[in-house]
Image 1 (cartoon, rainbow, N blue to C red):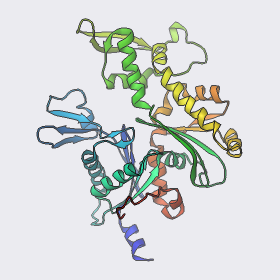
Image 2: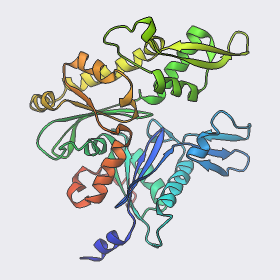
Image 3: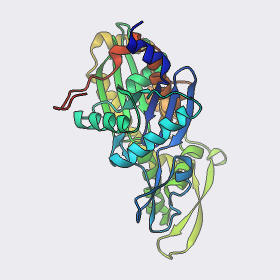
Image 4: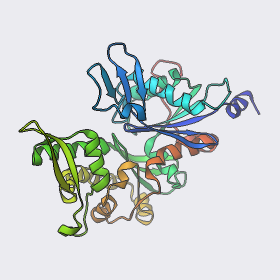
Length: 355
């Protein structure tokens, strides 16, 4: 065993699903130990970080003027380098808090497919600055496919759709590589915005992001095999500010209304899946028709999405068990077996800077 292998065994290695909406942390030998919203609360006057994760999320929409709760990742890409670095440092320290090791960890980070070399380098630099010894990158659809226990290293087609907060990642995988991929900026956040916009257009009611998110989770749907009867049409109260009177108001929104709000975005995701099918090599498509399309990510739980995809593509579609943790589980499996899975990691160009 060489010195590098000894270091690898002694250090506490970590896999991070660096999501737009949530960050999950997997520690080698322990599994997923942390799931925190990707939110940081900042004092604008001093630049001081006040809270990260769940504590910061509680402050969204409820802070005084000089305190802002921000999400440092937009569409899976770093929009604020320094804040992302602080968030990563917090996650890495939380993952290591019960270990008495002086060694910095090796870290695998999930990134959207199709990001630029500059964006990849930003993730690597932020993770290294946050306390990582070595940083490896893995594309989220690849990690999700591994987390779904798909046979990604076999010479056969695997079709994965990973719908997160900022992006929907669609990929065909074979022989440990991505053959075709699409990254669509229509995902959980866009669906929340659709509900907020619908509320303004139909009810003249201004609602917040958390209210929209709750509506999406509780009664959100994108497909009915037959239109629900009045008695079956689920409803829930929606509270906000009336844009005409300026006063608080509560209206009842129905599942049929929510379906109308989400229709356009759901159809965009399905259209991108169909576009991906059209450019998939026929031999791989034959495998996919047998194996089916696999849905992962929080957006996979949207009621009726699997049935809508089946209707539009004629390909069996399945939601994996615990879809929200697929990327973190997959990155963790790579972490546990780095030698076997080394080929699935992303190679980054040096950009004139030594790694």
